[in-house]
Amino acid sequence: MKYRSTRENKEEISAAEAIKKGLCDDGGLYMPTVFPEISEQMWEKLIGADYPERAATILSLYLPEYGYDRLLSDARAAYSDKFDGEIAPVKKLDEHLYVLELWHGPTSAFKDMALQIMPRLLSGALSITGEQKKALILVATSGDTGKAALEGFRDVPQTAISVFYPDHGVSDTQKRQMQTQEGSNVNVTAIDGNFDDAQTGVKKLFADTKYRSELEEKGIFLSSANSINWGRLVPQVVYYVSAYCDMVANGRIGFGDKLDICVPTGNFGNILAAYIAKKMGLPIGKLICASNDNNVLTDFLTTGTYDRNRPFHATVSPSMDILISSNLERLICLTAGHERCSEYMRELTANGRYTVDGSVLEAINSDFVGKWCDEADCLAEIASVFERYAYLSDTHTAVAFKAAEMYAEERTEKDRPILVVSTASPYKFAPAVCRALGLESTGEDSELFMRLSDYTETTIPAPLWSVISKNIRFHSLVKADEMKSAVNSFIDSLV
Ligand SMILES: *Cc1c(COP(=O)(O)O)cnc(C)c1O
Image 1 (cartoon, helix red, strand yellow):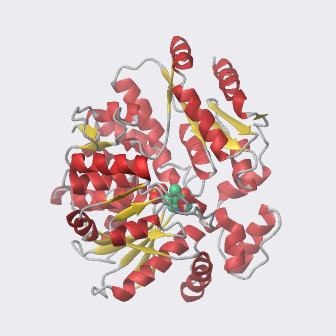
Image 2 (spheres, helix red, strand yellow):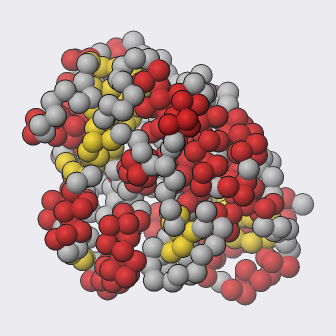
Image 3 (tube, protein in one colour):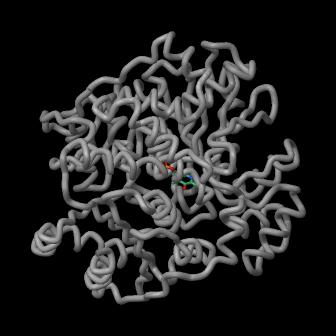
């Protein structure tokens, strides 16, 4: 199994090297040169297996040099009792509507599904490639990714992680989640500025070659944990396969029956993983790409023109507030080829827009359809889904429910089950969810959690509740131009 760029560079490297490098030198993203099919024999084994075994089986197809045993022990450590008992359960709402819940991990959002195992895959990549240096992960976060990355990297051998967040750019819950982070190799710093200041500061450190060679002398190299790394994408294929296996095992569908799958989408990573699962033989009908007011993907899937020149909307589903969906490049490469992919991406950089050929759009539309809804529809959908099914959804999942309903009305396969992907616990976005249900939406987190729990008779996730009483470990607040010294004191504290 080899990996190469989505762009024109034809050089091929191993999975471990691709995970270590993250991004290709030509600016493209690493892609496997083949997508292995899941054999009938493998399906039988998968259906009877638990989640870590399913993960190790799928991952070993893409990461052969790791070996099944290492991957199984990584998966057992990742999908462990840090999850609340269930890893990625499928819930039935009615004969034709199911929900795949991806928020049972330690930060109550779907980023955990990848970030609990990716650090172990990186650590494995270092040992497989004989790398002696320690990987220092630098992250600028506007909220969810920072916490999920901290939880994932905490105490993983040969790695350390330093997260920067804008002091006034994250919610109180998110800030507390990060300030109370445990682990011996973690650091959290607030920036006196906004998310862009934090992001720019991190990029500057990556671009500072003199600083990087100073770090090399100390046995450290800089790395990132962002969602374009193959090591974050491939673990996401697993839960689609796992959901299908569970539905077959529970008699909800027959083996071979098709599902339509609806995914609340931002950077296009989650839905792309479903597409990869389809390429491997998972019986998927349509993939419904659900967006909020930032509906750049809906427009692309409808017209073939991707155009980021538009106003940015801050919505109640902030993890989908994205105008450049980086992982779309992988789909473009798979449907248009490397050469045209490179051209489109050059146009995107130069003009903020590109238009794919009609034949490319047609190929994409045979697998994907795009739907979006606005803020009012999103909040109304939370109330409506709760009323109809007694099911409580967060703001991101609600966008997907609405999109699934819109698609269900126009499709011809009326009896095909739709699987809606749920990406966050409703408690993670408690003020908006309370508002949607007509409850008082102001107050401390603890009050909001209890109000929501009383009204809906649902359980407050333990990790969100425990943050309220945990001690604050990280207080430091620095100016954006002091980030380097913050990293340096962290490094000194490590040895
Ligand atoms: C990150 C995130 C998304 C978007 O996922 P992509 O892989 O970026 O498309 C949706 N919902 C929640 C809650 C998220 O955290």
